[in-house]
Length: 226
Image (cartoon, rainbow, N blue to C red; front, side):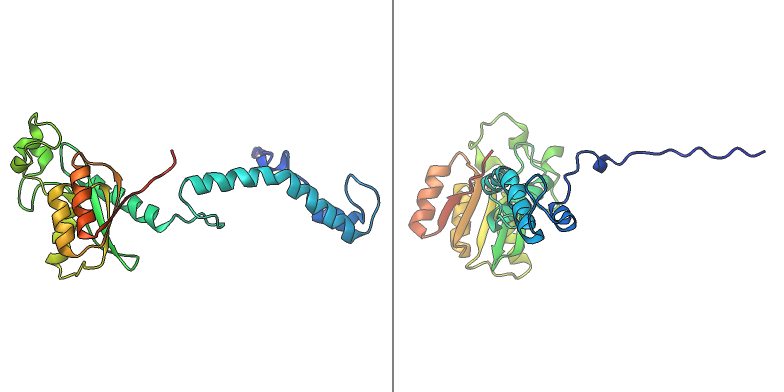
């Protein structure tokens, strides 16, 4: 005789501690749950008010957290444009082949990405992490001996990539994971980019900022709550 298969009954995790629906209880019972007898309409309103009062502190905490993270307060928790493009730049930076640091830039016009770039050796040259740049493989301190570095910077690559494909960047905005160096600042100015948004500061920040200010290019840091 064939054995009948055993049936495993698993309790739903959602069945424990589920709060009763105040709307149904008010409508079906005709009175306010936990309160004196009343009409269904009055009971429904009272039940809603009690639930809202209990949940409001949680809603306030969520709203403060969302605002601190630079995201809007609508139900979908959409990031701001600044956070959106900087997050994309951080993903692009993962393509960098530089031994020292991974940097990326995203050029945006009319809230559309028109070019991206990350730091590393030029096309056709051995990758930096494979020994393609002696300066990066050496012991030069950050910001020093840059004339010996064979790597192209992220902003430089984003601008030249756009030029290679015939894309105009004049009037655009550039998002960079690091503030640009002096050389990249000059390229940004001459390319007609009108605003720079960065997340971390590079060693030549003060000199670069002075130059961009004089050229009328807006220059600001993206601040995020930890």
